[in-house]
Image (cartoon, rainbow, N blue to C red; front, side):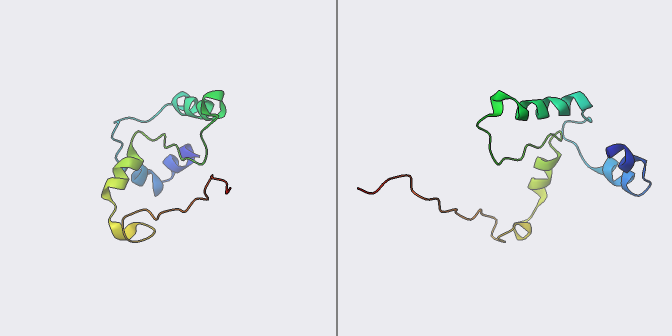
Length: 89
């Protein structure tokens, strides 16, 4: 998929202009190791997470976003009320 985007004359310059703090592209084997981790027993307690394997690009983008770009507009996460694990007596 990335090869097709890089071959496209419109999307290729945009992709190459994106900053990567690590300063390099990842070889396929490096991406595969992240997938193997998530599929393996060491990730058995990982649930509902997003793992960015992008050399730091996503984190760099988070620093540039304003509070108004956040979903609730306040720049703070909304508290999630979770059910109590206590049982009534």
